[in-house]
Image 1 (cartoon, rainbow, N blue to C red):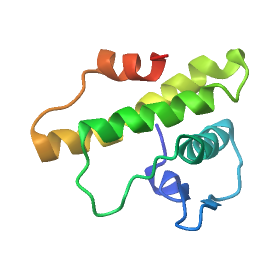
Image 2 (cartoon, helix red, strand yellow):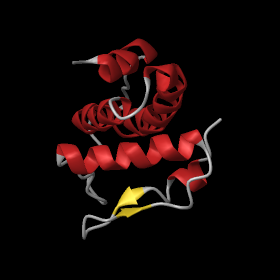
Image 3 (tube, rainbow, N blue to C red):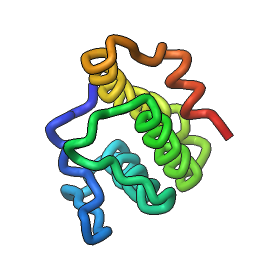
Image 4 (spheres, rainbow, N blue to C red):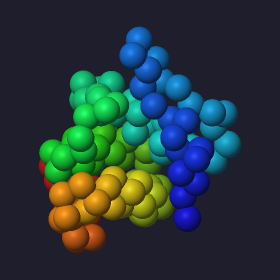
Length: 113
């Protein structure tokens, strides 16, 4: 189970710096690499903006960047973690729009080329 309280401390600041707590686990490293993905893909999830389906696609793109930064041996573990993170956004989509991605669709977003 992911620690949402801790994950909320991983983000890209307005000045382009990555905010994160001390990296103490692989999950922390995965989250930090995902934030580097935000910088690499030039995607910022603007606070106060209503979450959209396109935002989840962009989040998945940031995760794909992170996947390219780690050995394949860690991909399965990272995939599980990334899916849990995407699912938190997915639940917000359902609250806002009454619809959400299926688990298979989320997995496909992670694996898109």
